[in-house]
Amino acid sequence: MDYLQYGLWAILLFFIIRRMFPVKGVKHITVGELKEKLHDKNKQYIDVRTSAEFKGRNIKGFKNIPLHLLDEKAQGLSKEKEVVLICQSGMRSNKASKELKKQGFKEITNVKGGMNAWN
Image (tube, rainbow, N blue to C red):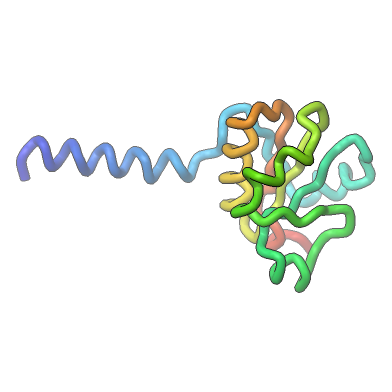
């Protein structure tokens, strides 16, 4: 392999790894910490799984906004209140964190492990 191929592989690897890391400025909590926060009415609880996943199993107090609809539905959320995001494993909610950060939301929290960790 020549240097150009090594460079291309390095760039590709960088972007793959970067997508897996948490978003800067986003808090990450465990499901245990979520259970302590659930009664706080000053937070917005959003589940970014599909409607079918949400109907199958959800946490009371969470509103379902599937990830693919988040861009258009985010206008209905307050940028002044903290947004707590959950999905099945934490990957989609991490992506949702990036989306909301781009839209100017300041306080964003992602639930680590998602519904997989919820008992």
